[in-house]
Length: 255
Image (cartoon, rainbow, N blue to C red):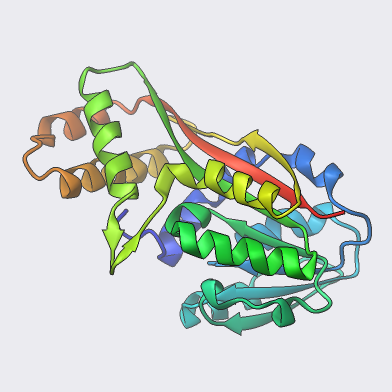
């Protein structure tokens, strides 16, 4: 999606993210969660959502490979009783030593951007450190628009193909990521609980809905350049549909 990791896009999606996350999973977290490492933190939206729902004091280690986003995130958590530090680097390089003293690892909208090998390595790291994980808003490949149009199925199929594309020699999992990660955690001895966490878009989030439509159709075009979707996109933007965009939240805990 164009601008997927820009500050403006992440800010636009933050309210819908907050509404979609499965808050009931918080009650299933182990007690005494005080040190949290957030992978691919972006602007820090996960910390702004979760920190007020956990006991204080807390210390968040925000991990991202984009220095500009990391700088913004560390300055904008702003939750009383919460301290923050930044960790610049790729989340796929995480080691058990990095997790010493960590009570919880989180991420948001990250798993679908990883490969099988990267998820296997991440799960192995968490299992070795016995650190629970709360991974939210992984793309699930389920999009429903109201009113429906015949082209919706074609766009959705092309978008899912794009999510599973080979990028820089890496075979992305896309919408297969939540199920793959859940199985990997179970094989590593974790107890796994999942919840649906769909975005609910439409006139309540008009700017986000329009930008999501542009990105959704744009990715489909990129995957299948022969598709003629100009009229479809313009029609959708002229009269915004209601949309349910499927995501999955996953909690993995180790006894």
